Length: 249
Image 1: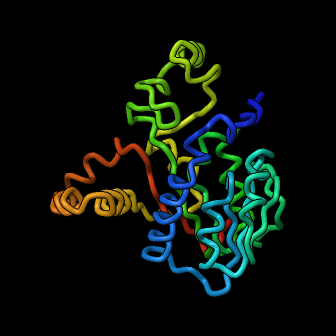
Image 2 (image 1 turned 90 degrees about the horizontal axis):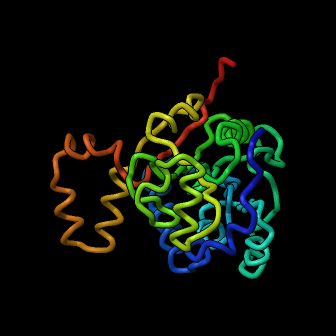
């Protein structure tokens, strides 16, 4: 039996409620989309797991219509306060998206897969609602990186679930560890129906360059082979996914 959705994640996560952090993520996604994805004109965009809608709203100038979807009622109440023209928010299940087949041009799936009870079903649904040739911006945590990204505790996500829960409790960070991250190869198994453009290296270089020109320039000088060697151990992956124009299914 699959576990239920995590309740009240928005209220329990200061990181998700932080406007500055959300705006930075929006800028990263916009940079990646405008540089590496060929966005169709007059596109309809779906932001899966939109939380308070800050990212959804910030990306909306790129699209004709932008829809933010989340399961968390508290997050959507916050989203209602920042709604703007051509942006709307709906409560829905990411594993059963309330859209017809082939209705969406672009999907944003940023830091969502580890929170969903069935990650494979999430990507099956994204594939279903995308038009042929549709685009996904995906980002998500890497299980092989030793620092767990939600609670910032070393090795938390490597422990058996009962030990992870105990670790979380004695640290005072929470009561139950819910998230389920995957490594590079585990993530790729979820997305075999998509073509993947891996921009993780470029995004990491962009982040460091935007925060520190000295470090950004230094990192850009590293040979590509060095970056590729460390890629499976990056804290986070950033991909552009494409649904094939013609399907053999």
